[in-house]
Image 1: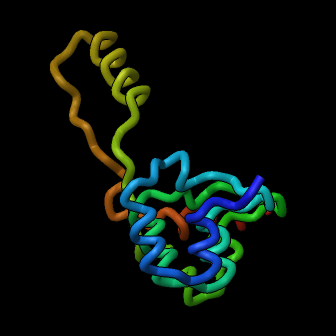
Image 2: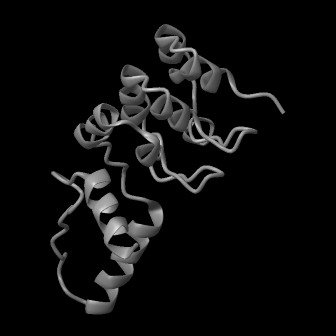
Length: 137
């Protein structure tokens, strides 16, 4: 199997091609694990393609996928690329299962609507998760 066009564009630092491809790329395609075991975000991170890393993260690339070396894109990045991860805060929409759980809780309590607090706002997901992983090692 051949690497995707997006993966190749990220490796080759072809920013315009990446922008073009992202207009018609699903999350599944964006997070595709390539034949070499890495994603496009892994390639961009490892090769220090800062602008592309930012584009991929803003598009919702999964920063937690591990490659065949058991490393996330963040873990493979040099410090200046890690700063991009820390500053780029994509917050995915609430999943149907999360909404379903909330509705079940609401019915179980038979009360008025409970306040919904989105703790994901103002969160630096990479730093928080990276620090948690470091403490577990």
